[in-house]
Image (cartoon, rainbow, N blue to C red; front, side):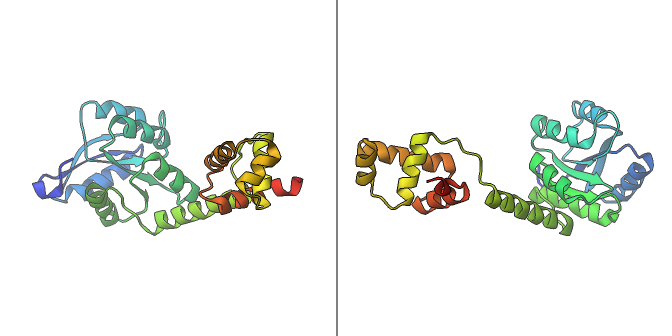
Length: 224
């Protein structure tokens, strides 16, 4: 992707089914010397067809459109044209939606009542730095991360452990040595170590302490 120092304007396409909104954005951005509007579409299908002929640097993509909406169009753009930056436009500041769209590859998220200068700043920022974060996206991503962590703490990931693995994990939590465990379950110490490594891999634990924490959260120690 060319950089701004080349002196070439940033090529922009807007996809939005509201003609008046499109016209307003085009007029405002048309006054900027470093922006060039190179196309417009009123739904996702039309946009994907347009992209076969015109390659922009940045797309302003409305979330709610007929035929093919922005949420369905975004992954297609990212798959076919990974270099194109996509700024999502919406009437709502829905936090869960922002997190979902950023995970799908959106480079920024703006509400449609954003000032034209904010839209201009977002275009320049995603073009130069890949992402444009504002108070809206920051709060949504922090809330999303917090919710995810709380869910993971309350409900550890579902892991399928065999009876033998559960038995050995319980013995490890009782601070038995590898040799003691090997003698108790009639296996070689090397096999016990291999099972311990497999338990770490399955549960995502980085250490013995992590395995103990997993056993506590999963309720394994309550079933002695």
